[in-house]
Image 1 (cartoon, helix red, strand yellow):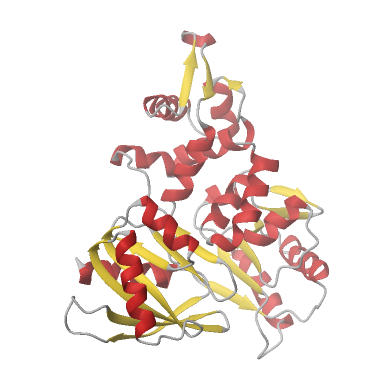
Image 2 (cartoon, rainbow, N blue to C red):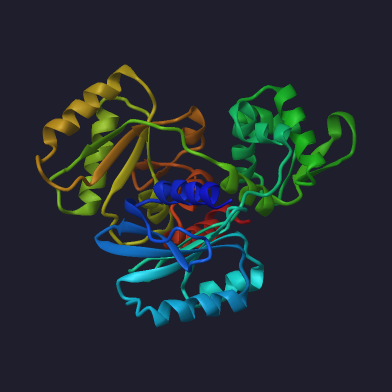
Length: 351
């Protein structure tokens, strides 16, 4: 259990933004000893040493006992942080650890890690979903769900109309809606040509999608544009892609702040582009404008599918990902975007 759980924990840490696992050291040879592994992390500009306590089933009493052992050893909590790795961690114990701002990971995938800046990373295991239902979030079915969450939250609709809007076949629309109905995520009214549909649980559908989504590997083009003003830099980037007729979307934090009208600057603009021969011309122009040996402030990646460009919106002359796609992007960024995702969901998604 321990070796597998430790490997899973390291995979989770490697997948988190702004976190680098620097060293892993074994500090004990027997599982009965309190601390058996130390993991040195780099979180942005800060360092953190995790002293990992491992056990089968973690209780609140064990938490206090192990923390007492840690205090007795004279651990300096300013440089080292206790962390609990267990097969099972009951909900009350997880709440205790979160209140104490102490990290944990269970074999079920429950994860919590506070960082030195006062934020926290938190992951929850994906809900149990039948394998066949995973097809909901791929291909043409994904396009239909994207359309429903963008335009039909709380509304009644006809399958034919939404199929046309999502640019999918009528058969795909019918199959997807009946699968949603089987999962109690949608409900139908009437029969035949007059049948209408409604999302029964749009919030649960969005939560399910955000918990299951995974990003494939992709090539990142990083640039350091010299323009200091954020709004000007954003317009300059959009102008380059428009000039070369590249279909693009500003995404992630910059897109969310554009929707919310936030004046806060985003240090790193992220852009997805549709694969096209003209992309290389635009990238060459950006590369020519980039300042060498400076901190990158623009990341450009090829869109992993056409679905992420679906229902893009123009905000103040800039094309940005749809509110739904922006939300899905930010939910992979950890707790640091919690307030931003909640505001975006409340004001622009409505579920």
